[in-house]
Length: 505
Image (cartoon, rainbow, N blue to C red; front, side, top):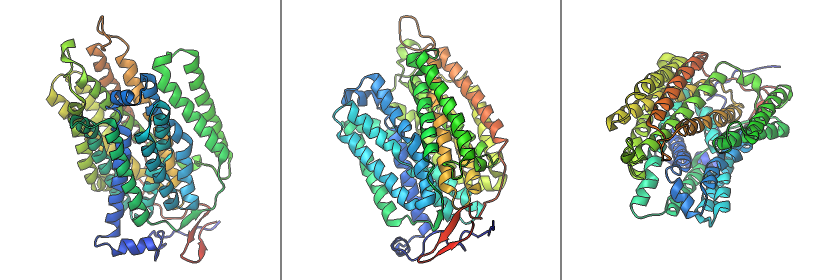
């Protein structure tokens, strides 16, 4: 085997002289700014599709004549559908080109949004949500940005940029549904707004997002795809239905057991397979697996804690706690976390460059732990929620951005799709735990003669998140600070405009 370490810019890992390049160069702004802007819109669109529907779930159930159980399925449909397709499409990006798979993924988002907007009943709406989950646009765009980052600092900056865009998407998501309904709109208006945004992102990506000239010569790991899809689907369904079925019910235990068995079999197969879907030998690098866990855990804490805060804010004050907030008022309460992530993410690149991904991620975990320990006994006043959400935003900005930067630095050209797809698998496996834990703790006991959780249940929720912050910090300590790796991955070659140059075999 021969290996040539090729600097990213010198290796020309993005196509030159194509129609996309000509359109990019014709703009009055640098190509990097254009691509970064499109990436930001993509993240905002993805966050809106995921988060905007959560506070609208009651209105969505009414619009599409769904039972609460069907409403819950509509939220989990995307996760289950993406269990197989996301890592597969991300890996296919390495094999056939990230641009092609990105455009296909964005098309799935457009189609899914349209199906949801025109749905006439539960089956069609849930089907539309499942189509949305098929898309791998998010990890594929990370792969695009990784290929265009020529330095370690460049990777840190793009990680911060995407985190900042995520914050903007969170802020918009929390306000969009409530604002539209407050202005006399309907759920369908919200869905059509999301459709329009996804069409805009698809058009901009087609016009201005270039392809890479790296191709990984690899066969498709069909068995690995089926195994990981089965494992993640069983896990998502088991966790999602655990509260309804009971955690000791035969169905719940069977599904979780199936998930564990399939995951073990999948791992054994991936280590044996010549062309694995997700190469565990690469992912066991200390720049990768601790970063996966830390990113997924802080995302789970952020999503679950904002869900718990939403419940608290919307609880009628007549029961002895809560603020009796509307959907729009709840969005305003949650706004600080999105704004801080948007602002903090834009500053994280220099911070990570100065102290490294490991220290940044550890700091975020410790910050979350301290905040939630304080919040457990101080969450009855509005100002306390503002303080908590500001600190949560800072914690998320630090840990998530640093974790992404860690494994993107380690992603050699030809591995970007696989490693970003692996991050999605970790997120699917871990992030679904947060809302389930919140629901289980809050519904453990109720105020007598009501279906309202006891106020002390919220104390326990915040303490669980405080402990989670400590776990995140401990995992982040295992991360290894490394500079960007520019050598081409195994079985990866450069493809020029008219000739192919094999660099590593």
